[in-house]
Amino acid sequence: MIDGDDGLEFPRRGWAMLTVALAITMAVLDGAIANVALPTIARDLHANPSASIWVVNAYQLAVTVSLLPLASLGEIHGYQRVYRAGLALFTLASLDCALSHSLLGLTVARIVQGFGAAGIMSVNAALIRFITPRAQLGRAIGLNAMVVAIASAVGPTVAALILSLGSWPWLFAINVPIGVVAFAIAWSSLPRTPAAGRRFDALSALLSAATFGLLIAAIDGAGHASGAVRVLVMLTASLLCGVVLVRRQLSRPAPLLPVDLLRIPIFALSIATSIASFAAQMLAFVALPFYLENSLGRDPVQTGLLLTPWPAALAIVAPLAGRLSDRWPPSILGGAGLLILACGLLLVTTLPVHPSDLSLVWRFALCGVGFGLFQTPNNRTLIRSAPRARTGGASGMLGTARLLGQTGGTALVAAIFAAAPHHGSMVAVAVAAGFALLGAALSLIRLGTQAGREALAE
Image: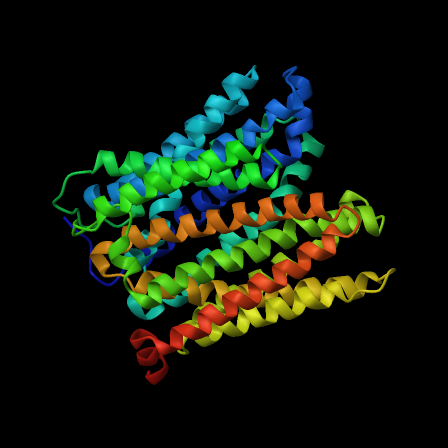
């Protein structure tokens, strides 16, 4: 039996949103927290430091290659089923990570954990559309955007706190009780969503995994100065797989790679805006700690505290932006938010040689305000511009856009540091401002689409 067409009733709606928030927090956090522990993990497992990087890369690649296939499975079999399976797999793999005694064992467990995280991320936004009444969708997506953004921003701080109290296996073990609680809540609270009457396209899933997996690997390799031939081979292979994938999808009514949704101008522009904005955010997040510690001489604890106003401001603004996006055109809100983000980043580049803590804090807070004002309206537009039956494809593309932007931003920082070792941090922040301005332009262009004009008329 399918649940109601306009969201769940209280208190079930509150419990469903709680399990969604708990699971997405764990999935996003685990994409970042392992970075801090890599030196410790390599030492404890007697592994080469360069080989230990796969503890991070294995998770990210597993998430990236499986997001769209799992979103498609959600449309076919029900979003709640994919979500529960992903949450269960993520929790069990977290326990396996905590009990690992070798780098190979930990890496394999991280791959499995990444597949579980993709099960959560791929249908996260789709579930929210069925949990929440239409009139309150903006504020619900705002709360979810706040959780995702804060989890992304505070990952290193959380990792440092856990490591100050215990050993690295606790980074993963802490997920187990939270995962069990989230699964218990999910079992009884999540809505039963419609199941599409079609078969899973396994070949398209493999082509999608190859396309995005090779693309991410090539971007990462370019950023870390891997061999030019190797990067070119991966890019070429990614392009070829992508061409075959797109040609295969064009004739399908509900394609795994949502080319049908990408034909909707406001959806395509929202995806491009999301990629540009997350590239801007990641450029700043990776570059600013180097600036604070290497250029200003702050220690890691001070660096974490000085950067805290960014996620704190985001946490305050994102829910407010969700409420506003139910009343105001998301294109204007998103464009204004990215303009504020660009201003904040440009103001960072104008800092004096010895800035005060206050001058740093208010600039970082301004950046958080801008990103918080942007993200919720953009995500709302992405989800609402897709037909209800294709919410899974929209949800999968939302996660894919975020990962592409973050990966591209990280790779760009590495390339900038290699080209400008003495002023790389500020160059990266300036490039981040450029991406924010690009995102603002793309967001405002949406007003020219039919959907954008209708939103403005409302």
